[in-house]
Length: 379
Image 1 (cartoon, rainbow, N blue to C red):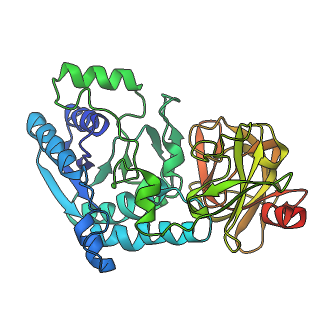
Image 2 (cartoon, rainbow, N blue to C red):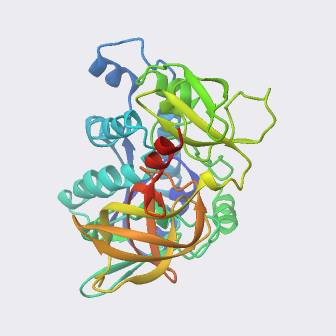
Image 3 (cartoon, rainbow, N blue to C red):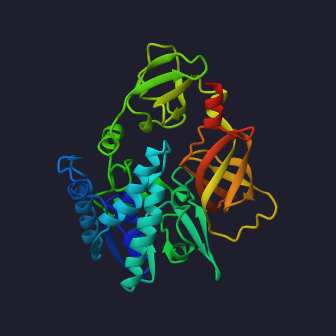
């Protein structure tokens, strides 16, 4: 097959490219450029904004070296405007609402498996491929997304919003491998990225001081940090938008014995609510409303369905029961209370190793009362 592989400049996509070539496919590579500080600053009319040097040029040079080493053609494709319009603008709008979106899921949905996928199809490729740790099984009428064999690296969570159309023409060459084996292959091939550190930053933007970066686009507004249980003011936050449920680090209230965790926030009053202790009941919820659903397989929800779920990456599978409600949403009941289930994040559902789909966490509940309603009543 003729395959276009997304080559990021990291070790995973480099080894994925090698494996596809070794299997006899006609492989070409593409480096996606989706963030440019100067271009995006011009959009906002502020040429000094976010002046930090992005690592993308370094990544491109690494990708170029890998493609040269493997004897593969490399394309350089720009989706800067698409990333801004469809990923980053939505990312900011969600933060303004006090929600916490996942940029990697958005990037996969709108860029890698939409615009990049369309680019590949329009240029005569049969399939696309990436270095994700996931597996795909292609059937006659649909394709199934499965967890990667290396459960420590499984990235199916980040792929839960891609379309069935794209999944049907996607390959994940690393799905059957564990990370140490990928490193070993890269070292045997003497690839320049064999020991390169894995990226942990915002998708395509890179590793930044997150609060400082976000402050460029959502100016900080200081306010009170309040002990939700005693109503005591413990200190000042840097901007209520910058914090997420369950967060422990960066609260700067060390004068009061903790540990302290973010339990909620009020955008209107600009107040951040915290509670003491990791097992505090204010940190847990019993159910959630999930919207913006994407199902890979035909799902029958005429009756409640019991399955497993993840509400954040690397979380252990949680047993849940889901049922359909109005407006194409689902209600999810947890078998046991779960901590830090966060509106704006993704809920991803599994039956065994099969990822059946996912959706956005709209709100979380205890006794069918939302977190904000509980906080309002308690205040």
